[in-house]
Amino acid sequence: MAELKLSETRDLTRIERIGAHSHIRGLGLDSTLEPRSVSEGMVGQASARKAAGVIVQMVKAGKIAGRAVLLAGHPGTGKTAIAMGMAKSLGLETPFAMLAGSELFSLEMSKTEALTQAFRKAIGVRIKEETEVIEGEVVEIQIDRPASAGAASKTGKLTLKTTEMETVYDLGAKMIEALGKDKVQSGDVIAIDKASGKITKLGRSFSRSRDYDAMGPQTKFVQCPDGELQKRKEVVHCVTLHEIDVINSRTQGFLALFTGDTGEIRAEVREQIDTKVAEWREEGKAEIVPGVLFIDEVHMLDIECFSFLNRALENEMAPILVVATNRGITTIRGTNYKSPHGIPIDFLDRLLIISTQPYTEEEIRKILDIRCQEEDVEMSEDARVLLTKIGVDTSLRYAIHLITSAALACQKRKGKVVEMEDISRVYELFWDVKRSTQYLMEYQSQYMFNEVPTAEADADEANAMVS
Image 1 (cartoon, helix red, strand yellow):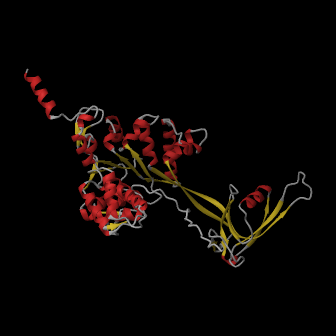
Image 2 (image 1 turned 90 degrees about the vertical axis):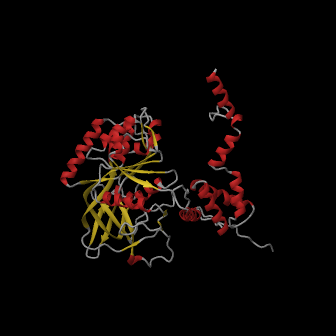
Image 3 (image 1 turned 45 degrees about the vertical axis):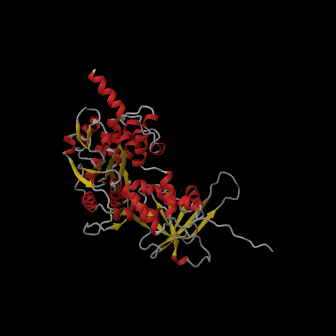
């Protein structure tokens, strides 16, 4: 009898796309804001991470709205990683909006409108409201179905209990339908919003945990509620100002958030919303949560955008602005003037500048180890040493690109661990910037529109000038 071979099954419940910064989980600081050498995916850049940690603390304390921070450093020194670390450290409730400087020029709206929307995406509003809720464990559901399928609708009774009391409620057709839709049965703990009639299933009661021998992984057990059945609960909603703008400016309301068709929003709508939010703040119904707006490639903005940002930062509803650039002294877009980082001096004056330094060999090694783990690639010690050397000689980004390529080369030769030969193979296949530039210099005459002058061209030009 042939041996039955079970095919390998892969767990497809967790499918994630591995991105350039998917290994970043925070800034890697301890309670005293001292950076750990390797923590939460972050390596090196101790002073920059510490400075970012101080900014995060100020954001959490609500002290720094309307300020701006510049992350400046060489390409591949972890500027975007620090910004991502800041976003993760702030938690889910603090809004974090991300924008690339070049994005503004390809949108179907004006640059200033796109910047305004980005600003308002980074400002959260925490709205509090009190609602009456009936919360208890379902003892019994009785539904009386009419004998004839005529005009008579279903009626029924719902018995709910807490640890202290038990009450029977009469049910109408809509409530019966809602209970059926949520598959509510005796032993479930439910909450009913009195205003809307919305039913929320909180879980099954611990007292009924032995009713079934087998249960699904999603079965959640909760304690039977205590106290009275009817309670007043404070519900907190967190939304951004941009979401409120979109909901109030479109006929389809919040659906515009999903379609992405937000378009330009009128100034009157924003003024009304700001007035309403200010009223809620005075009444204690809402509070403003200033978030973070991160603009990468800030040198791509033009002089109009910088002028707009200057004014926008003075607004009382401004978020914390974090910008990043890898440019040196370069022309400000839209002008003929040169300035550090391609940013006008008056705007630079508002920025707290955090500098990032090139990584050392040891730090490159640690980053490559983290990326190997993230990309699920096993690599031998010799291969890691070679890859680190390549990273030092070329760039960290190039070395990171070679990890997956080397893993595929290893797979092709049916190996399990990436060896030096796999790294060498992909190093020959894919060139880095230095080797590519060297090749262009050697064979420049064979390319179109070559702008690097050759020795012969220089001599011809000199002769022409003499004559």
